[in-house]
Image (cartoon, rainbow, N blue to C red; front, side, top):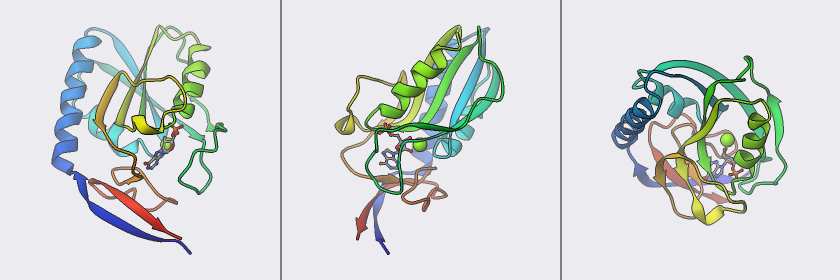
Length: 177
Ligand code: IMP
Ligand code: MG
């Protein structure tokens, strides 16, 4: 059984909520008068998506997808599988993918191609975190909460082996095998 050692808080609940409000304000400006479909990527993006939506005042629709690119480990397998697809059509709509973290970029790269094939009016990405040190494909989120270093993050929806998603702050974890 692996043991986990959490570090000190990296971003507090207050910092994350303030950042969500700032990003929502930008989205409100960028999509003024439009309808936006927010697609949350389960399960890591759930808290971030909920917080972001509280400050969105353009017409919003929400949907979720569940994709897995990870086994139980802390390194991406590079293989993306769709576990739950969209419930509604996004054809002709403005779409924002809401993701927890961009690490290797493999998941978002795949998702972007997949969703573009459905002919949305536009497609952007909003990620709580960006971990540029992990990147293996050329992809950037259009809206980023915070940039983090080469550590494994948990909290605010992010997990290690399904643990710590409920923490209302962001921290890093060391896995002791
Ligand atoms: P990517 O495909 O490597 O960009 O990462 C895809 C997924 O890996 C993210 O949506 C997260 O669910 C997970 N992930 C990547 N880095 C971390 C991390 O530091 N903590 C928790 N999950 C992570
Ligand atoms: Mg994820």
